[in-house]
Amino acid sequence: MKNTTLSGSLPKQNGFARFVHEKARTIVEIIAALFILLFVYTAINKIIAYPTLKLVLKDYPLISNFYEAIAWGLPAVELVTASLLFIPRLKLAGLYASLGLMSAFTVYLGYMLIFTPKLPCTCGGMLQKLSWPQHLIFNLLFILLAASAIRLKTKIGKYR
Image (cartoon, rainbow, N blue to C red; front, side, top):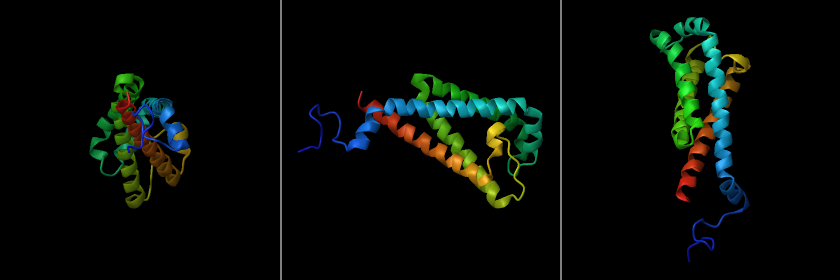
């Protein structure tokens, strides 16, 4: 016999799984809000410190040839991603964009930690106060949040 509830729509779950399923929409909204705050905050800081951002990016390995495009493009992409997360029907696309951005930042940060002795930070604001290992943990946590929200958001769609 199939392991389902009386309605036949949801599999039988333990207490934690049932809680997560019942609160999935709320969890996705909270994670999306965290990303909106993160991306708007960092984008605004980059825009405010635009001249400094350009100078710092000019010395970054691998991307120094594109520093001007990155200096204006990165805050723009962060703001577009935050906008996607704010629009309900585009939220899943925003979550995928968040996952992609955080993954790219983390891979580049890993490269910098391994191959660059002097590590300048372009995050701005409070995030600049993190040590590089803390920054890496922060990024990995947000990657985990994005992946979890994507999984929950896709599961929500299955049971509509």
